[in-house]
Image 1 (cartoon, rainbow, N blue to C red):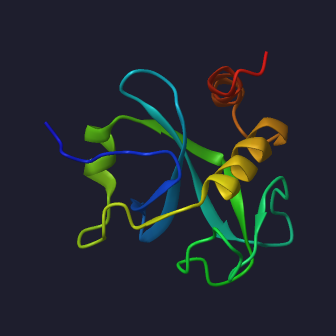
Image 2: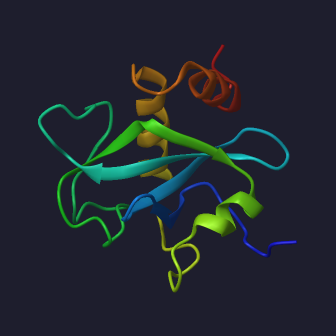
Length: 131
């Protein structure tokens, strides 16, 4: 059994093939064992602007160094065993933590984002009690 604890707002640095690493944030518990994760990425011209994060803002970890967005399109649902397999070697666990206010901003962005897959949007709505 893996000894990783997941709290909402925790962020983990994950290996994302082929050669990249992305910061994934736990934003909802979707079942007794699984969590919904979304990743932070640098803002680009065609980025989803449902949730924009500014560096040096209260509740945004220092790991975020430039204007960033949540990439809802690449959301993942994982349990702790799956999470443990993709955490970057040598990374702190969790890498950092987002405040409850920023977590709420990310969750609300997921509700309005057209890019969050419907199955995950429905799971997020259920978790938040939005019907």
